Image 1: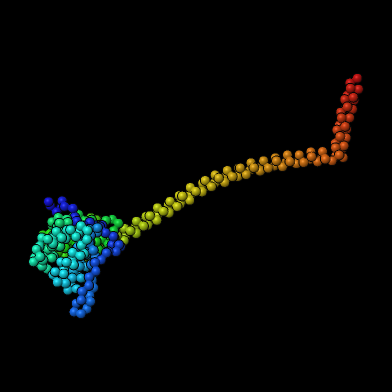
Image 2 (image 1 turned 30 degrees about the vertical axis):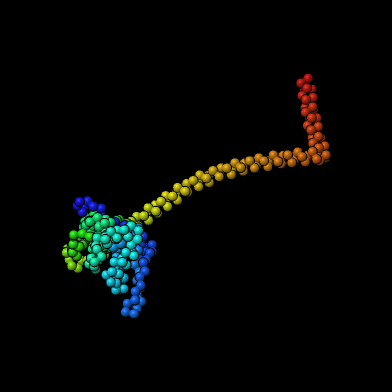
Length: 311
């Protein structure tokens, strides 16, 4: 199977949470009268092969040097750091060598055989093809963070089993810059006549140039979001004012109608009070009766006078 058809054993997003603390296997040895201590993270398969080769292997090799382990101690101590299914992978790789064959050189070969049992052969070649042809910088990742991830994947890939040699300095720069957008690469080529072949251009200088492009795009995006936010607030304020006007006109009409009702109510109340007052005051009643009698007398007199005139 060609490398381009294989799935890489390590992805851009790490298989473990770097903020989560490791569990450690602790070692102690007296060296030249001094008690020396070291600890190595435990590998149990839950954090993936990158954690194994980049974190566990590196910490183990430092402990191996610090505590001056013998060859036998090296093989036995490494087994103590393997838990879960990783312990089974290691034991199968270890058993490929008889006890008298468990040398320092074969220890490194046994670790490589362990990764072959886990992920298959030539994983280094597959990872190199992935870094050169498939890996692209995600849009939401800054160039500076992308550089750190590229370097971590490259460092871990070199420790895997395979036949391809690591890229040269110029080749790695070419792999790295190809992980950016075509437009960004064209801007870099336009700005730098020598390109990646210029020895003064490194992964760091390339990243600095790409970071400037990222910062300009981020400012433009931020300013566009601010303008859209201002427009939404402006139109939202205008729309919120029109209902208040209608509500105010409705409230004014309702207040005027309520004012008319109050006037009518007061007029009726006054009339009722006058009637009640006339019923309670006897002098007022006699006066009103006299007024009615006078009006009746006047009407009778007018009728008689009109009848005499007609005769």
